[in-house]
Length: 233
Length: 254
Image 1: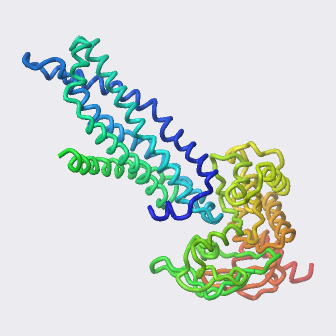
Image 2 (image 1 turned 180 degrees about the vertical axis):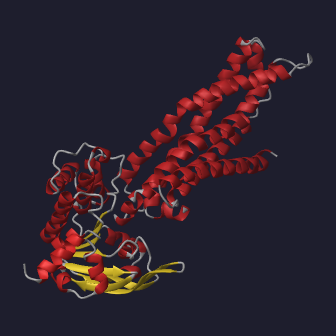
């Protein structure tokens, strides 16, 4: 599939408008759900951490530290990606699958268009925006953590910022964005594969979307382990 | 002209096309008929390259399709127009965008020229003024006509129609048949229509290829169908009482 995606490129002017469309469909339209989930998960992570730090010898600023580490290293890149496998992945599989069922992909092929390039390549390029979405998620998650921690009475604002800056290793941000980029490619290609190569009718489109979500999640989780092992251990 | 030589296609143990040889002339409406499951759609898909035959050859004029490099096949496909059974219109695009699509992809025309050509073909299929509508807003017959407009917009040399009348009322079916025949004559293109609509057979069947269980059972035109002694063809064509009576009347010269 990879070879065919890049084999015969679609006309640039057409491709450009397709990429803009995909950036909107896959990226911009996901911002709302990402902000919403990040805000609340950031808050919950802080509350859970605070409630589990019952030892008086542990400084309260560690709540900010733990929230930062959880959000940047795992919650934003991985959990958001699994949620996106449900939202973006299902959308990709069902839209391409419907095109397969209704012979729209055959129509592209008959016209002499490389349908894989036309359908999948713009999604891959559009998903380059994904690390920016993860950056938004990280920021909003930390805002959520701040609100819950400070306004919930678990720690002061100064303590939160002290914890937030404590032992900060810039490479961990690089690691998080490398992960995000890999997950973006998985989110663009695995659901596309399930949609493009599906067989059958409308019922199978639904089944393909479910299978796509399961496999995208599995590939993300396994990749997460491999990337973490390679970059952090 | 399209020439087919000893075409075979199987799916596992299922031998769908068995040694089919025939040719389809330019400027006439060529019909492929047969019962459901007789291999018509597979045959059509093998001709246009959506399926790869197990053996046999398909020639477009002097070019053997299977021997062409993928890039050359894509170039040849740009000369093909296809009307799919369900229309296969891009449902996220308006009628105008659908019809303009092949021009936008391959033609170096300016936007104004493309729009003029789109309006010209939409008028040709009797659908002026629907440019901004979505396919979902159109009736089945209108969708088929948009599909025909998209099929002919890029001046194709070959037009393939997969059951263009399915799901349409008899009057609309006739309109579609006449339209395809007129376009074929006007542009002198090679047109293949895959159908099991008997009205089409008698109205526009200038060449008819009858497939049965994947074999080419009979070839002729709509006039020779009346006098044909092939039992399988007669069972297929005259399966309804109306057509049986029409045949009797025709043979009696009524």
